[in-house]
Image (cartoon, rainbow, N blue to C red; front, side, top):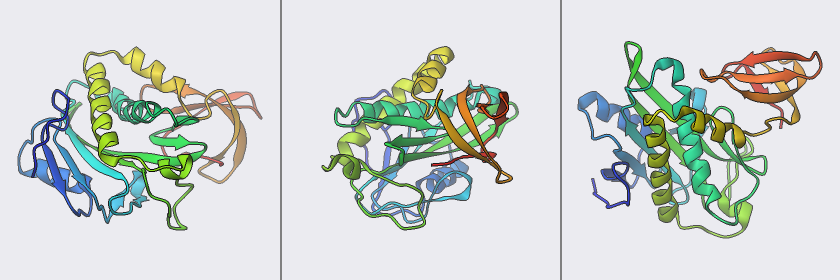
Length: 258
């Protein structure tokens, strides 16, 4: 364990840093099972060997090239019906961090929780909540952000990195520090119940919003649609341009045809 003085109020003040971990999320979850770590505790590694994404997918990361970390939060103030706002917070924190790099353009948040540059995935989020009644007891926020990696396995879908997109290497530590600062700002925004601001910011940078594109339902059928927005509970709203009817999709019920 190491303690690092980030310029934040609480996120990253306690930093658990490891040369290698199977999964930062798993380590954080195991930590929560034993005690109650300080809110904002960060688990980070240079080499995550069994990283996971949403819905059982894998997250590939080369040693020392990227950001792989998890943050422990206690958003008990957030009703279960509004838990998708935590996704918004984390996605916007990554967006804020990358948009602060002047070279990065064509940046967007792809529903529900991927970060895209030029139609390629540069970052992903895995949030695992422990529930208590109708509230969230604790959250482990896993973030993977590709910084300087140049080669990805053939099984990965449209991955990219800042280096691949911009042709120059970045300081992983500097971006990590800015990411934690941005996450704290957005989380405090959520805690202050500034939900309308978060929602507006999220929708303003939502991938393919108000743009015609092809989507694939779970049964394999395709349709031309236009994303109109996201509901409080996280359902995606798409206007089917073939039928002019509004359709709603939960996670994994629709795919983006890239």
